[in-house]
Image (cartoon, rainbow, N blue to C red; front, side, top):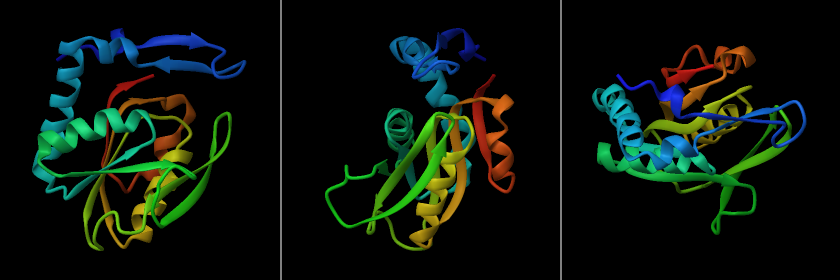
Length: 171
């Protein structure tokens, strides 16, 4: 199996002092590493009967759309507030470095859909909690959470122990 962690670059004090940002661009530009990451996620979620992938703005779009393509399901973007053109539901959340809101179209998928949420990183879990809230507002079920990186020292995934969380790298 590929050691995905060797493709992650630490950027100290970004986006503000005290934060060590995990830069995924070295993995994305390496075609084999990116392919292996998507293939590994697909192998985990292929038997789970997912109906739709929700990708969280913005790096979740990269992995989520590739997963949706490979799994043969639709892709729904969850965007920052004010970025979607139609009627939306919104949820606010705390980041490790601020506050933000996410939005989803009210008609993104039918109630009862089995949804896989995809993002690049689980940190404190705030972004993920907002995405789960939005999926549930639409009357659907989160069947899994796929991420490239889990920052275990922030304990974000502990909030979601009732969900199938699959991460390729833990720091």
